Image (cartoon, rainbow, N blue to C red; front, side):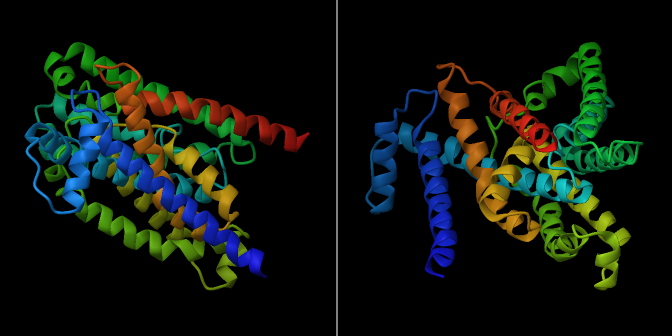
Length: 339
């Protein structure tokens, strides 16, 4: 009994220590002239409420790194929860918004809107959410194809094809429209650089609705993992739950993509880690995704600053370098289990 009680506590303590460490490193490390030692000195003086004369370091931490860290944590949590929901909905552990076209649909919608003359700041959030919703519908349509529901690899391949087509359309628009390319070329590869806390104002309504939807569908999704007939017998409505889950995924992915661009593999790696820690229960998975998603994104953000100093690498590129081997490993494990 003691072991069963202490194991979750130990996992929770480890996750908490990791996210605190990621936040501290995120505030301390950067590609600019402010060294980690100066950053830690600023943080220590702020903790003990003692003034410090290092105005450059204070500006970098408060105005650049702190907003970037907060936004990265929100993006990580949103993408991780969206991936867990999508995997539970499709009953496919390889389903991920970045792989199956949800993020690409969101990015294409924003690109089209900007190309038509709209300001990216004014249209990005609702248009990105609409594009993510269209991507979710495309994922479900693909999952209903013959053989795709039974074979996770086939669903992923179909999703990759859909993502490739949508990404090609986005690139084509940027190629022929210089204004659009100048406005969103850094955003479209997935980046947290230059983000401000004021950018979060337009995200809160969608994220709040998504959080309420996640709380509502978590229990029915756990029942639907046993079969739709079992869920219906317990008083749930599978069709309604499916629609609400799609809407929650669209709001989460659309909000994350609107502020940070399309970042792939977070929704694949985070649920994979949380299921290994907590088991297949979607409710436990969703709760653990809240810290694990930010840990992944913040870690990738730190790597993006130090790998090519004094320049920075987009977070989306770093996550792709980390997530692709994880995807290959998951596929190999599943293949071995089927032999």
